[in-house]
Each structure stands twice: as structure tokens, then as C-alpha cells.
Image 1 (cartoon, protein in one colour):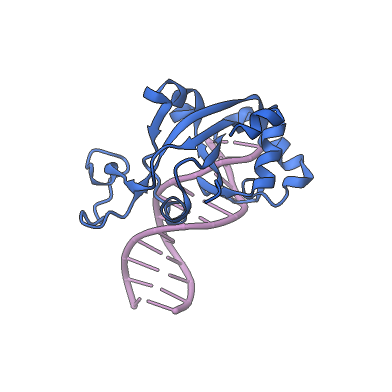
Image 2 (cartoon, rainbow, N blue to C red):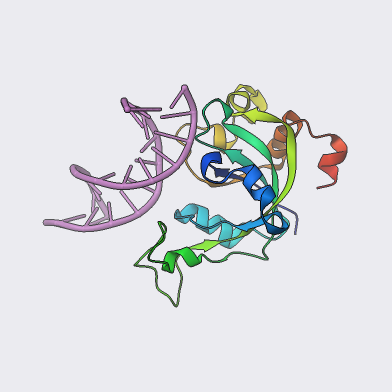
Length: 166
DNA sequence: GCCAACGTTGGC
DNA sequence: GCCAACGTTGGC
């Protein structure tokens, strides 16, 4: 099965690309996804080894793509925070025997040589169909087409060799 | 801080 | 099943 490409959003003030780099094994579980569409992508389509663009949202002038991560868990598994009453992500209605919310693990992979801002993504004609540049697109986990993925990586300064090594 | 866009909830 | 109300996201 060929690798799939994704884009994941995170607020750098909450958990940024640098924070993932500092985690043990540079890997962290991606809890707190509470959107069915995003969950379904994780559950049905995301597999270990898939590559995701790490995108910083709510970051003022620094909104944009900062680097790459890989899916480090075999597949999606239950998000424990849905059963934790002290968590912001607690969901009283999620059945214990059939957890509503899932997550995957992401591992830090490679930083871009330069930030690729949202403005830049929007100004690149070849990316006009990419989900992240579309108006009102709020999904925090989105599929990315290979051609779009490669263009974003090039904008981020990755060499052809680095792209091939992924 | 504003507000447009969107997803979810719940009354009916 | 409709839809108004509400909450959240996220660019600006």
C-alpha cells in the first residue's frame, strides 16, 4: 500500500513542531481530536509510515507549514482523554466498550528549511485545490494529494534527494 | 478581539 | 428530519 499524505494542524502555543521534537523518541500521541471527519480519516485511511505536513495555526504572521512528521502507530486506537473527567476532552457520552474517539501517534521527521506561510500557499497557483487554502476549512487532519505535498516540500526548501528519502 | 464559517446539539 | 441556537476554529 502506497504511503498517503496528510496535513495536521496544531497551535504552536499549545503544542508546536518543536515540542514534538523534544518528546521521547520524538513521538507523541495525538489526543483531543473531536471531529468525526478527522477521526474517520485516522480510523480508515491513516497507516504507519504515512507522512504529514505539520501546520501551525493561530500563529499570527507565522501561520503555515513548518515540517514533516510520520505516523508512528500501526493504526488508530482509542483516545484515553475521552474517559478522563478532568480532561478538556472528556466525553461523557462515549461508550467505554466502543470508544467514540481515536488517535494515532506522530513522530517528528524533518523540519522545512524555511516556513511556508499560508499566504504563500494561497499565492501558489498549483495549490489552489489544496484543502488548507480553502475558505472556512477547519479540519485539523486533512488528506493531501501527492502533487500538492511535493510542491509544499519544495517551497519548504527540501531537496529532491530529501524528498526521495521519505 | 472580531467575526465568518462550519459542526453539533436538541427541541419539535 | 428540519433548523435555530450554540460552540469552536482560525485567519486577520
